[in-house]
Length: 360
Image 1 (cartoon, one colour):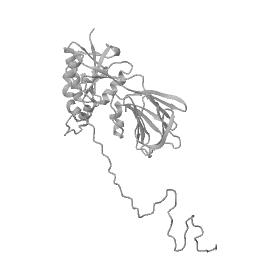
Image 2: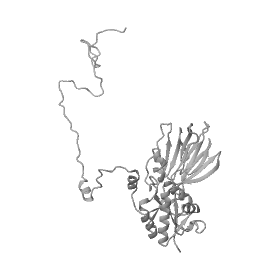
Image 3: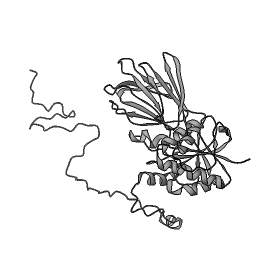
Image 4: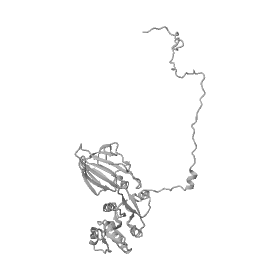
C-alpha cells in the first residue's frame, strides 16, 4: 500500500504554490502519493504550471489514510491544518513560509531535506496540549469548541471595555474592566499571550495560562495554573458591553453580557512532527533573533567538581569593653532614678528623708 502524504499550502502566496509543486514532484518521484484538497488543486492548476500526478482528499483518499500532513505556510496555515485533522491523530509537519513560524519545523531553504525526511520516515511525533472551550448563556450550553494556542475573550465594541470576573477551580478570583482575557496553552504562550505580556512556557510544561489584556486593576498579572484546573471568565451584566470569543484567531462567537466561558485541558492533543531534537531555548533564539554574544557555555564536568568547594565562614568580630567601676551598678528591673534635689532622697530604703512638705 502506497504511503499517502497530504500537502497543504497557503494558496495566496506564489512562493507557497511553488513550494507545493516542488514537494509533490519530489514525493511522487520517491514513490509516495502526494494528496491535495480540491481547492488547493484548483488553485495550483489555475496558474497553468506543471503539476505531478496527485490524488484528491476525500475523493480518492480518506483523511484517515493520510500518514502525515505537510503544511507550507506560517502558523496560521498550521492552525488551519490542525482543524482539518482534529478528528484523527495525523501529525502535522510545518515548513515556514511566513514570518516567525513558531509551530513550523523547517524553513523554505530546507524544503528538499524536509521531504527527504518524510520519505525516509525520519521524524518523531510531539504531542501538544489543546484547550476544551465551553460557552454558557443563561445556564445553557451554546458552544463547545477547542483551541491549540488560545481562547481569548475580547471586547466586542472598540469604544467600550468589558467588565469580567475571572475564576479558577470554581472560585472567583478578581473582577475588573479590560480589553479582554487570554487563556492559553504552553504552545500558545509565544503567540497572543506573549504579545499581551504573558510568560514564555516551555512546551513540555503542562500548564494553563490566564493573561489579562489592558486590565484596569492592581491584580492583573499573568497566571500559570495547573493543567487539572478549570479556568473561567464571565462577562458581567452591570454594563451593556458585549464580548467576543476567538479560538486560535480562526473561530469566533459573540458573548452577550452574562456569558460564561469555561476552559479546561482537552483530552485530545495535537500531534506535531519533528525532524530535529532542537531544544526549545534554541528555537526561541532563532525565531526571535535573541542576542547571545558573549555566551561561554557550560563548564566541563571536571572543572565544575573542582570549583565546588565550601565557602569560608565569616564570623562577626566582637569587641569587649571593660566595665567602668566608678559608675553605679544598676539592678535589673529597677527604675533609673532621676536627678535628686539636695537634702531629699526618694529611695524606698529611706522614706524618712524628705523635706516634710504636705499635699497641695
